Image (tube, rainbow, N blue to C red; front, top):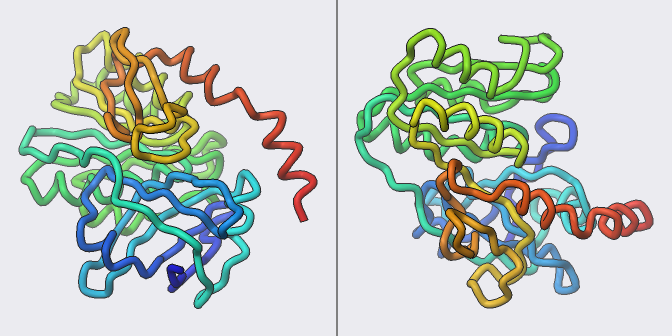
Amino acid sequence: MYEVIRRDEIVPNIHLMVIKAPGVADKAKPGQFVIIMPDETGERVPFTISDWDREKGTISIFFLEVGISTAKMARIQSGGKLYSVAGPLGIPTSIDKLGTVILGGGCYGIGAIFPIARAMKEAGNRVISIIEARSAYLLYMEDSLKEFSDRLIVSTFDGSKGMKGSVQKVLTKLIDAGEKIDQSYFIGCTFMMMKCSNVTRSHKIKTLVALNPIMVDGTGMCGCCRVTVKGNTKFACVDGPEFDGHEVDWQELFARKSLYLKEEAMAYQTYR
C-alpha cells in the first residue's frame, strides 16, 4: 500500500495528489508516468508524474475526476492509502539545449508540462510556456511555471484572464509575430494536441505530444494503448508516451478513446 501524503482539489475537478513512493521518486524523469490502482478491485489508470522529491521519497500527480477509479482517488484524504503505484513507466523526455522551446498544457497537462519546463530551462533553453483553461478559476501552477519559464502566457476560453482563446491561438500568434521556435511540446486533451500539431506542421517546427490512449498494463503486453504513428503500430506505454505530433493518426486515436464512453459514463453515474 502507498501512503497519500496530500490530496487537494486545487481547482474544480482537478486534484493534486502527493504519494509516498520512494522507488518511483528515485528513478522518475520528465515525461514519465505511473499506473495507479486505488484499491484491489480498481482499474489500472495512467497518470503523468508532475513532480518528485527524491529526499522525501514522494511523487506528485494531477488528475481529473472522470470515472469510478478517479472518483475513488478523489475521496482519499491525507494519510489514506493507494493499493498500487507502478512506475516510472514510459520513455523519458529527451532534454537537450535546443534554443527556444514552446510548452503547451491544458487541464491535467498544465501540471504535466512542469517537469519538462524545469528540465529544459536547466539545460539552458529559452522556455515559453502556454497554459489554457475554460476560465480563470480553472488555472493552476502559474507561479511554479513562471519560475522555470522565460515567458508564461495564459489563455482562457472566456477571456477572464490572459489572452482569450486557446493554446493553439496563442501559438499561431507567436509564429505570426516571427517567434523562432526550435521545438514544441504539448500535453492535454487530444483535440488541443492535434490542433497545435496542425499549426506547427506547415512551419516545420518539431512537435512532440504525450498521447493518452486507453491503457491497461503499461508494459506493452495488452496492446490496448496501440496508436498508429507514421503508418506503424506503436504502444504508447513502452514506445511513448511521446510521439511526433505530425505523424500521429489522430482520427484513429479519437475513435479508440471513445470506444467505451457510454459504458464509462453509465458506470460513473451509478457508482456509489
